[in-house]
Image (cartoon, rainbow, N blue to C red):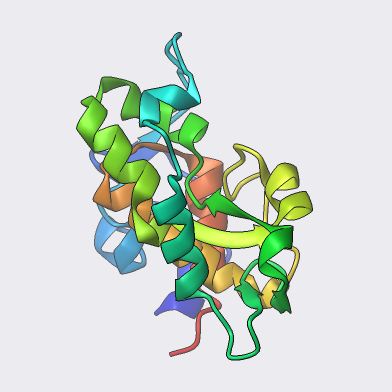
Length: 187
């Protein structure tokens, strides 16, 4: 199913809360993590974005948990986006669905508690080299992909999951890119 999802066809507009990614693709044919994601034509970023709106993230406890989740037996940390083990001191914690992106696609209307939960959600936190995190910044799948092609399935699945779980909207280009990468996932 995943391999056929992105067969030749023209892009079409969103259909209700779920979007048909390619011509002839019905919402129930989308990869499961992409179903129910609202597609918007453009980002409408409300004024007032500030990282502080998401609480003091990531706290030292949140950072320690993210590092521990990716710890290797030799004391290094697995950098998923680059697919290599790195020294813990060289990493930053990346938000898979960036805080600014979340703000622009729905988080501006959330309560402070929901924004804080999103910023600290373990599914949204990946240790990666500072340079990779800086390069990604607040980009989404339509404009940024992990440097290692082997990481793209994980990135797509996490991005789609965070977007769906927190009822965030997405640009069609981001949904198409994430669905394409998800289609490469094994199984």
